Image 1 (cartoon, rainbow, N blue to C red):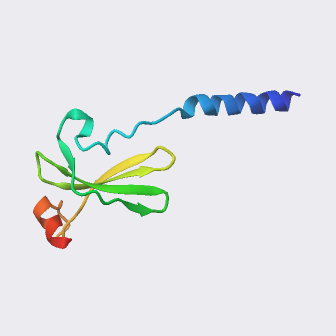
Image 2: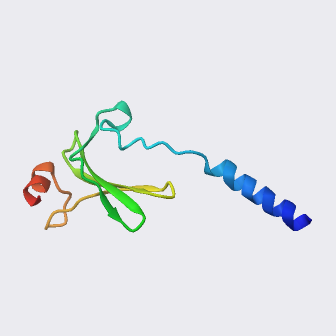
Image 3: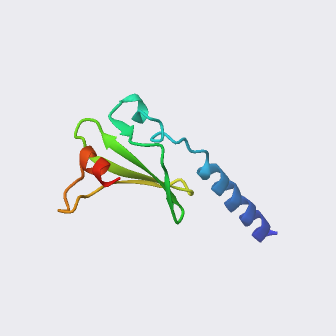
Length: 95
């Protein structure tokens, strides 16, 4: 009986802490700031992540933003051949 109560308690806590997530970055203007803009409508799926390409409107640097199916996310700048952050014009030349 104690095991059943413990299992129900653990499952209940998992349900409470999981909650719903809202995809804020997939919106064309990141949280209304217009700082980041999605470069194209393409999405790339690798393993359990979905990636989108965004450009920072202030620095003109291109970023890859990924979302995991488990609610995790990450951001990384794309790099050019020299290993420096890629600008939008460099990214568009590679397409």
